[in-house]
Length: 338
Ligand SMILES: [Zn+2]
Ligand SMILES: [Zn+2]
Image 1 (cartoon, rainbow, N blue to C red):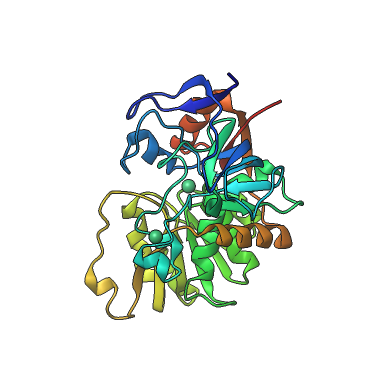
Image 2 (cartoon, helix red, strand yellow):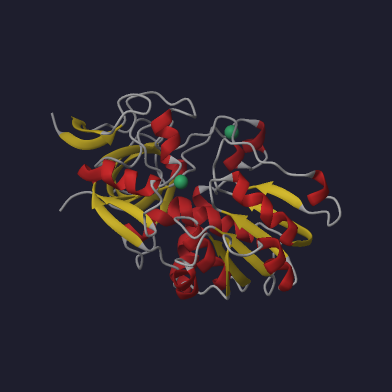
């Protein structure tokens, strides 16, 4: 029996166990990915808590970069040895109403890597072929990994928003998602405002290209945005709804508060914050595997890069704890092998 190391959660809210299990075999329509790097995302806490109904034990991980190690029956579009990634979009059924309309990210039976099946906190993982993302040659595994959730989510949210080049766009939160959101906003040609708590992140945000910085602890976010003419889009990457709503007053008419920071806590939105300017609160769900490929290509083309700290897979708990404490600068990435 050939085994592999996996970092998995044995039961809801339990610490990770680092253990050896048999290397899984790909079924029809699936591939086995030899994982080289896996980003540690705040949404991994959903797996740890079982918040989306996952089974236990379960290995989280939906920012996976590696290469195809074995092909299951019927997989013809991919080859062994090809560098691939797997992101939040972990598969779809192709048969539900959303899929029949081509809206695969909204699949009623959509799969999320690390929730529906063991994700990238392991040396190997099995993924459906439709979840695979081709990784460009110029991008390393550790840099590609965070782009497959944090990257594509912010990239796709911005390009699908109402913002057009030259518009004022604010990124709320300069963390795992936000530090990429700031870079994408700048490279897409937006007048980019970074908003975070305290002054500590100002120089970081400016290094990432932000044209403006708002410290939400000392200034009125809406007022500051309005001084710039109002934001077309505020991209909320923080996971605290109470931190999102103050930005509503800083939207220009027809602007959007686009929410990507995943939280189950309620958000208080006074209707009168939306009506006068016909503004909107809009959710955004990541992107498909092809959207991820677009994000990777755009990143290589424009020089967008995640700021990462790598940690061996065996120290998954430490990496996860650091991320949850908000101390990651800016993305923890687990690595396998020597
Ligand atoms: Zn994620
Ligand atoms: Zn579907």
